[in-house]
Image 1: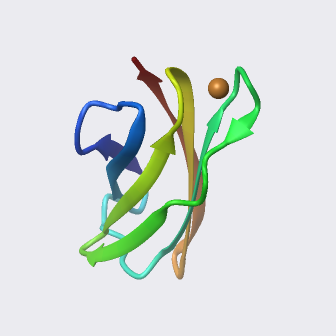
Image 2 (image 1 turned 90 degrees about the vertical axis):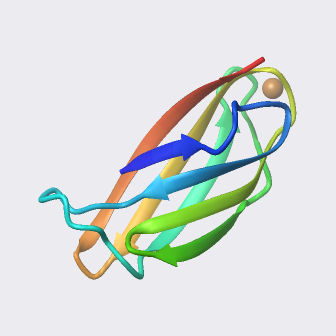
Length: 94
Ligand SMILES: [Cu+2]
């Protein structure tokens, strides 16, 4: 699983392109994604973002609100017929 910001992470609303693949590298389509952004230093969360299944294993996550500068974590859990997996990504917001 990869999660690439569509622009340099910044305060406000951010979008990410999440690619979900099997261990063998095949794209996973039709998955359900749970996405949660948190700021570990302050133990607060962002509102739930919007996830759109673009097909071909690409999921676009919009409205990830980084409300302040600092280190944020984006926890993504994908559930699909092939199984489920989760990964945590970290972004420094200036
Ligand atoms: Cu904070």
